[in-house]
Amino acid sequence: MMGYIMASNVQVAVEPRLQIKDLRTHYPITQGLLRKVVGYVKAVDGVSLSIDRGQTLGLVGESGCGKTTLAHSIMRGIKPTSGEIMFHSQSGRVIDMASADKGDLKAVRREMQMVFQDPYASLNPRMTLLELIGEPLITNNIAHGKAVQDRVAELLRLVGLRPEYMQRFPHAFSGGQRQRVAIARALALRPQLIIADEPTSALDVSIQAQTLNLLKDLQDQFDLSYLFISHDLSVIEHISDFVVVMYVGRVVETAPTETLYERPLHPYTEALLGSIPRPNPNRIRTRVSMKGEIPSPSNPPSGCHFHPRCPYAKAICAQESPPLRQIKSGHFAACHFAEELELNGVKS
Image 1 (cartoon, rainbow, N blue to C red):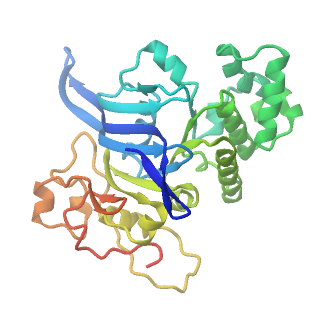
Image 2 (tube, rainbow, N blue to C red):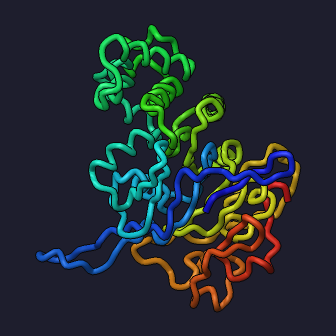
Image 3 (cartoon, rainbow, N blue to C red):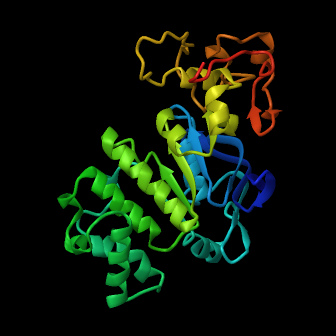
């Protein structure tokens, strides 16, 4: 589905960059000498979402909900079980990453890049910054020799580092500087989409803010689309245009950021928002706590996966799985009672 933005009270069509439809990534569980399949871990179970050009989609949920598996499925680091991952390339082609052959994958991966959580682990300690950032340029036959050095110097300037650092090794830099190097490497091939998997969780709070501001500046400069994955809802609120909430492999709610934070429609989202620290400790607000732990995707509960932890659950919640449906304009939720519940947001 093509998105829209408002410009001078007129709707303007926004080109989609990535469209995912009913994506499933299941891992077989085997037993015995013959490795008989006895079940599946449903890490991603019927996810649909869309990211428009120049948009940031925030993906949030507890650890184990399938966020990282979804990211690797999009990049085809993991082959999905079923579904579609339609990427709209700069050339105008629309490529299904779920079924693309090696030739198409090689071409489209230049336009899709990842920034990983831990800059200490994602950078080869035996390579200089020149080698780390220049490697994709050489591998894809984009630049060689002096042209590589010039491009690496340009990229280092873009992320706020000095070009003369290119002869240094990663151990000479702080965590925040290393993540800037990782961002520079992701930008080397001029991508259209960047998947950022918890890119600030290993950084100090002040450095987190600098990194987020850098990502927003780069987005404005290069018209980038982001899939931003985080468990930190304050970070998601700061950088995202839209938010997708996942629980046990499924999307349970999606909405524009401001709408979702002011008035969530799913009890799980309400509980997540209730965990955000308050700047005013004297302000009293009723918090909804979740009982129990997130269930295993290999043996999820019947009906609504959230019903064993939900304070609003009724009999139907254990029997029928609620579909993800539009409750208000642009606001979708998978809850039987989304229209009835009066849930608290961060400003409630």
